[in-house]
Length: 198
Image 1 (cartoon, rainbow, N blue to C red):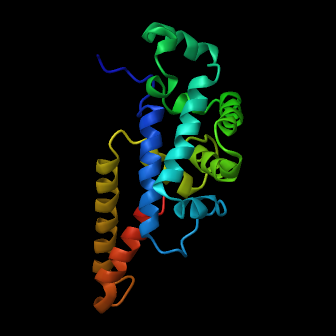
Image 2: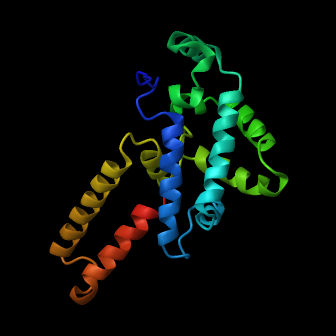
């Protein structure tokens, strides 16, 4: 079976969901005091297990595949092989950025999950949507989007770490920042905190 061409610049929605889970699970390694500027959704999600996040992602992906596609996406799906091709494997961020479509997805996703898990799913959907929301967004949302919608999450994280190291070296050379005795420890702590909280 030939690989599907994703109708977007980034990864498919299903691959982005995997990246999102990886990013949020990595956040479990970071100090509990870290919270995002959007409130507590991300910090609460950091305390959820991989099983919970996978359950929420499956409900979201199932809802995306069950939701009626906007016309321009129906045409692309038809050209790619019809309804047998799942929207989550064929499309990327652009489909989710359609506000009317995302509203339908959120409603349908709640139908696919037990009553007890609806609050967690709502937080998951709210936080995941920060990765593709257009318009004026926070720096944290931009960084979350860069990680979630990366074609190669490992390479993206490596490049971000390299840039942080370069900034830390430049600050150290300029005599800015922390004392020499704790500079390596503090730089490592900052790197881990910044890289993994998103």
